[in-house]
Image 1: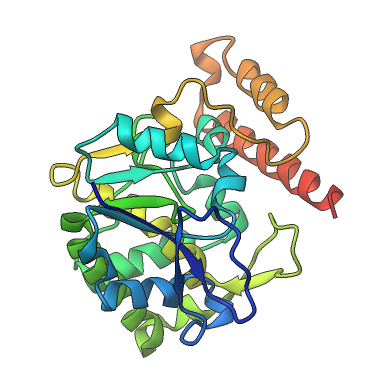
Image 2: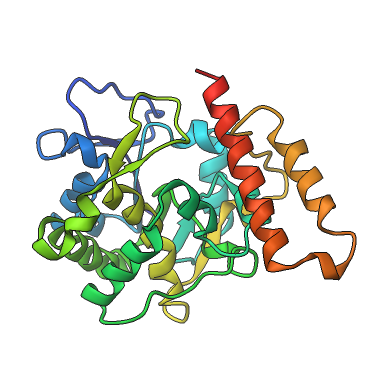
Length: 277
C-alpha cells in the first residue's frame, strides 16, 4: 500500500515539523495567510496529488501534537484497519461527550457557522445540510482536516473542495469571508474568516451525506489505549463532573440542561486557554 502522508507548508519560511515519513506539500506560493489551509487543499485537489497513492492526506504541522500520538501509532492504526476509504483523527472527543450535535460548541465560538454550512450545501449540492448527532455519529466527527482518504474518496471530495473555494471567492460567498472570533486559541489570531471554520467542519457533513458510499474509521472511536490530550488544564476531570451532574436521572437530560452543559464546558475551556497565555 502506497501511503501519501503530507505535511502542508502553507507559509513562507515555515519549517518542517512532522517526521521524515511525511512528505512535504509546499503551497506557500498560492496560499492566503488568512485562510490557513484552504488554498493548500485546493492545490492538492486541483493537481490531483492523491492519484499517485492508495491513501493520502494533507496535515498541518500540529497534527501529531494535537492528537498526542507519534508516527508509529499513526502508521499502526492504518495498517491494522485496512480497507477503509477514510481514516479520521479527531483530537477533541470530550467536546462530543457534552454536546448533542456536532455544531453546538462551534456555534458558541463562531456564531452563524450552521448558516454558513447551510449556504455551502444549498449552493454546491442544492440540499439541506445533513445533521450530525454528536454521540451517535461520533465516528464521522472531525474538524481539524486530520484525515487520510482513498483515491475514490479524493475523486469525490476534490470536486467539493474546488466548488467550496469558488463559492468562497464569489459574491454569494461574502458571508464566508466575514471575520469571526477565534476565542479558543493561544495565538494572536483572534479573528479569522468564517470560511476557515466552515471548511474544517465540512468534511464530517460531507461524509454524513455519503454514509453508504464510503467506509469510515475514526482513531478516536476505536483506539481504546489512546489517551487524548487535554485542551485546558483539568479538562478530563471537569468533563467527568459535568456529565455526572446530568446523569442522576433521565428527567435531567433535557435540552436546557444540555445547553447549560455545553456552555459550562465552553467557558471553562476558554478560561483555560486564556490562562495559558
